[in-house]
Amino acid sequence: MSDLNEVGERDNWRCWLCDNAVDPDASVNSDRGPSVDSYSVAKSKKNVVTVERLAHRDCNTMKGKKAPVVPWNPDLLVVDPSLIVATVDRLARKGGREVIARCPSEEDAQDASTWLLDRLSRFAPDLQLSTQITSGGGQYMLFLAAD
Ligand SMILES: [Zn+2]
Image 1 (cartoon, rainbow, N blue to C red):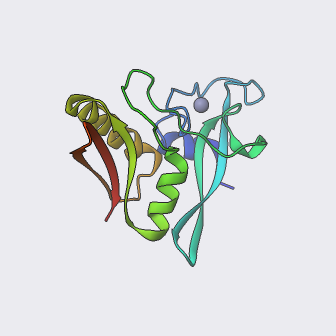
Image 2: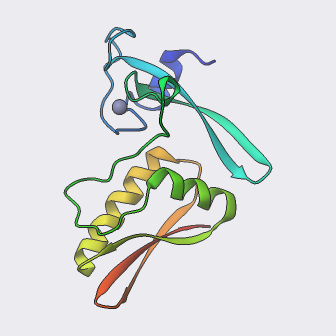
Image 3: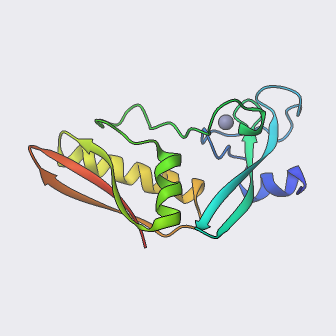
């Protein structure tokens, strides 16, 4: 188990799940206080590593009853968005690409792409991820691909 301050410094005191700031001086017993979240990440079928990330205590999945959730930015216009954590996990194991959301316009798809890549640069900094936008059936598909 790493030192909380070490993990906090490395993650710039930002919660890896909700992407909001974590107050380093908040009590570790308060809901919004800092905690270390241990999470298994599949690098490949045979290589599953445990990473330690900074999370708010109440965002910390180790307390939890449920799988971790990274919420989509509610300002984005996306239809049928996929679960970000599950999609990233599959891509890390298998590579390839998946449709992660559909958007009504190309501009919406570009906004979603920009947000997603920025968000994933903090959520999954070790993965090489890119996006592709293709049009079809009157809408725009946003793909997420692992290299
Ligand atoms: Zn949080």
